[in-house]
Amino acid sequence: MIKFNGINHLAMATGDMDKTIRFWRDLLGMRLVAGLGKPGYRHYFFEISPHDLIAFFEWPGVQPVPDKDHGRPVEGPFIFDHVSFGVETEEDLWEIKDKLTAAEFWVSEVIDHGFIHSIYAFDPNGIPIEFSCHVEGRDIRKNPVMKDASPSTVTKEGPQPQMQKWPQVGRPTPVQERKIYPGAGSELFHGKEQS
Figure (tube, rainbow, N blue to C red):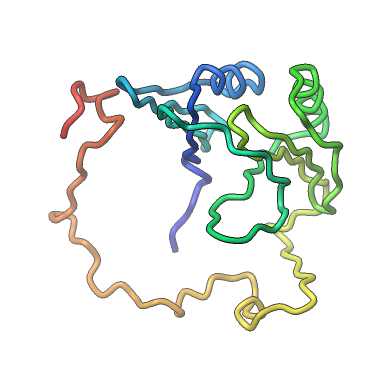
């Protein structure tokens, strides 16, 4: 079975990379670990953890989205509600809350979700963000919990992946046929970007 090791990166968009850097690097303390670009296009990466990054494209004309309460239902085309960043301790949660307040960003009160405590805010681009700390002894990864009053038939199959529900791979790609193509970012390590 495939072993995932986290979120390699979340890709977001901004119309103002400098404001974005000030928020993610300087206010929240996430290191700016890679950047590439040219006129009309920048792509920067910030380190969330040893395994996880958040990246931003800067495109001319991108504007902050209007505030939408985290988790509030919407209608019509929609893709993304919010992203939650894990912190190690309850103290980290309060430190972030205080930093956001001091920087005059809206931030919620600390909310108890049973297995996590969370605060909610928005970055300068209007991206809804959450910061969460695990409640000791309540690890839903180790002990899944389902309290849906009306779970679907698929949900009732349980927490384990049901791999047999999809077609099996008939012909894995042979090693001699595997090719990796250069793309944006390869210029950081291989010189000129290939096209």
